[in-house]
Length: 176
Image (cartoon, rainbow, N blue to C red; front, side, top):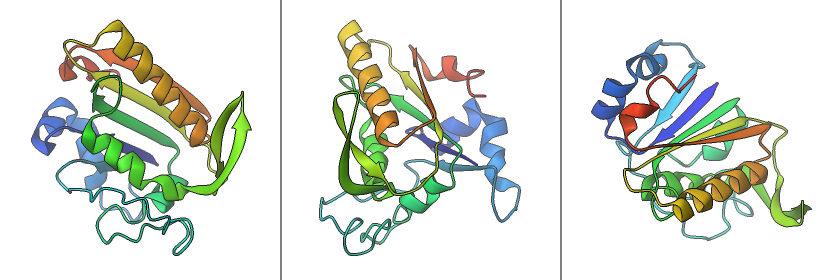
């Protein structure tokens, strides 16, 4: 199953990607894609460690993002679409990724000299990140690419690709 996290208004997403927007409307018990958008606000992670200690894998905050760990454990491909903000994700996309920390364990491992979380699940999803913005500097692009790749290592991804665009419309046709 694909999981798509984007920071567009839902109407803009449906206009840009009408075929993808229809994937969640097929009425199956396990849809081919789950699309997360700012239409459903996410409460910010409060750093309480509840998703690691109190309710392993599940966030203690009651909202639509409480089970991000379980969702990611069933995800074969994670697609992130985000405005590039100072070399990072937009606030909404970052917030959803922060709320996904229950997908991992609170313990650490060293990979290529970097500290990353120990995996909670055996799932190895592919991660594709699409950053857009009309004034992304070279430094912001380099920072965003390093961040996306580090996140992919942390999530135990099977692969990671990062793309940059000046406008959201340029992403159309690049979402396999």
